[in-house]
Image 1 (cartoon, one colour):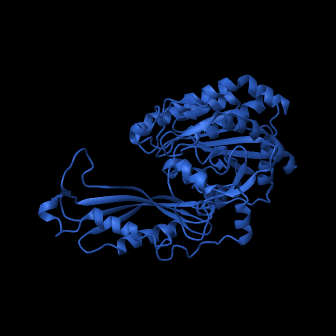
Image 2 (tube, rainbow, N blue to C red):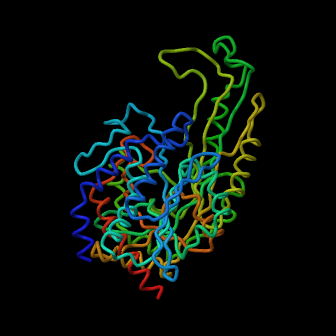
Image 3 (cartoon, rainbow, N blue to C red):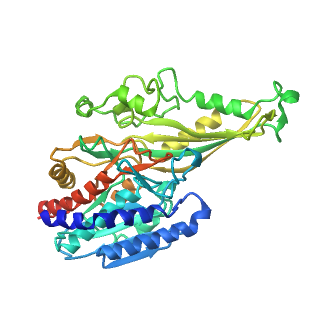
Length: 456
């Protein structure tokens, strides 16, 4: 609609500056020293929702970080869309690898560089500005609700309780999430599924204190060595995961689905070049897109122990640690896989060390049916603004609350992400194209319009 284009063009500089202000708040949920920043960010989100036209916005405290809820109800008889997003961000470490301050956003070559630029402040804020656009132009065709949480990056530990206790408040017809990516702006796509997650930490203890590696080396099991051996044993020569029973519940993709995935343009050489690696790695028998979408994985996220400071210290450490995550596909259970992981590492403990494995958090895989009107409304909206039909793809990341939302609220989720896989999510120099930000704001109102029409 021309009225949307005119309004967005008139206010685009303000839209962008408001996002930059949000990005300046270091809302790192994983670190206790940012508790005040988390509260500050929640207040900022509340204020922006009110300014955009929400009639009610409430900050709900939790045992952890607060949840922001807002709504704009125009007619109880009309469909209701619940928008989910998160204002918390990943830690910015390692800081020395950033080209600019992670919480000092800069725009370079049309890209916003800052922690949270894409994941997820830039993406959820598109919905706030879409609401403003529709309210200001008197074109809102649905009721809108927002739930913007502050703990997604730490597994949403308090969201389940909130959802269960506020089912009436959150009642809606569909949930709309922008926390995913497209293939490219030239090849628009929609994620029809996200993988689940199981995340554990392993602690290996050997001697009761750090030892001199010359005096004791060769006579005492080194916890770092033992941990490295256990981790190496998690994959075989075909990069197949060796955890007993790991693949038991995996729903294998059909030949038709794999053929559909193959339609998405992909260049392994360009992919490797962008990442600065000479060769790709993964489970034998699957393409890169399949490995990152329809197959489960196990990755080492961090490992430490002994002396890691400047210079040399000849020490045989008392302890070694690792953080390990798996990505899960439909029919796999995070609870089941977590138990299998813990049992595996405990069973692999060699004599001379003690292994302790504990769970951090997890979440279930989720799929959106492409024959639903929710998906069809999203596809039509993207086709309208991009001039191309979007390709349905399976996302490699995880949004742990998806299965929870469907179970507790009984409604489907549709993903409308405008990020790119190359946006350095969870890495130094996270970025989000200004073009993508504006494209999202332009596209989202069409979803609401088409969804309202289809629901009639």
